Amino acid sequence: MPKQYPKEQRDRAVRIGSESLRRWTQQAQVDAGTRDGPTSEELAEIKALN
Image (cartoon, rainbow, N blue to C red; front, side, top):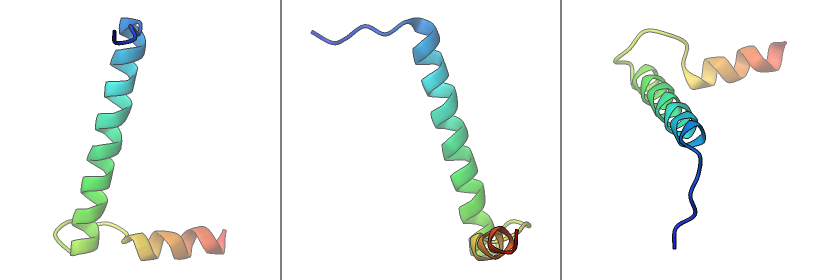
């Protein structure tokens, strides 16, 4: 029998998961050059400088 989780917990998990997917998609578009913004490589370099 599946474990039951509270509705609030399920809603939060969906919200967090979809937000992560949205951000990953946007970053992939930046890395591919189809969207403006810092690439993953540039972000890593910025992070290393801080």
